[in-house]
Image (cartoon, rainbow, N blue to C red; front, side, top):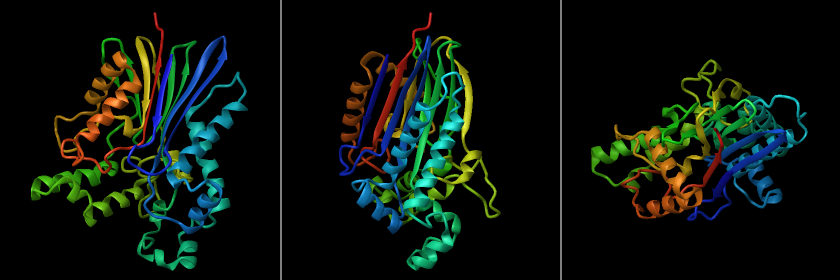
Length: 339
């Protein structure tokens, strides 16, 4: 049984920037391809891309474009894939990245070329003094993709960014393969909460301050990051689908056994129970474990209602420091029937 919820943030007047894939290939023993895809909110806007989105895509955001292109590219690939061949998560994510690159080269000429942008749009000089900040202009999506082969009770995963895979057990415990804390994603919020403690300011005041807003925007430089010499640094960078070839060095992959696993859960960060980045007792593993215990009893839809109510009850974001009151939320739970 598969449960899926993919809901846009209720307080934002825009299309959902999350997407998902639920694909079954049934040749006696079914194989499943599941993915949670989370478009990353844009922080700099490239005029040709904005014009294209307005004319051709009903005005969706660059983040929603990245998520939808990722979904469609993978589903198209799977639809033409030979059934007898092995499905490789890494290849699927790279295919989606290449498809986004091809589209952007076609509809937003020059978006990957800092010199081109500076020549035609010199007002971006304050951003592109560091050419690596081209990443601030690129539509981007985090994604967790799994291929489940029920014939051998094995799961193959590809992990990008802050989406999450959890293996859920009947005793209520969970494992989270492939996901590691990356300071580049959390640095702005971490700095904000530190300022709240040090200066006695409110969370809202701090996250709206120019310094924290700048930190939050500039973390994009870590997307498929390169250093001053153009070399990737996997321990610092964050893998995302944004069309850059450096993605190859940032996809985390692995193989895990599904023996004794009751369910496989994938989620975007907006579906995760929130925490506090400066609380030493806060732990993603424990939060996901509590989520699984609730979902196992009540299902993903009731869990999301519970999460939304908790978020609304914390409008000042003091209990759970975060940039948005609500975020887009995607949660997928595939229940397995292991003997």
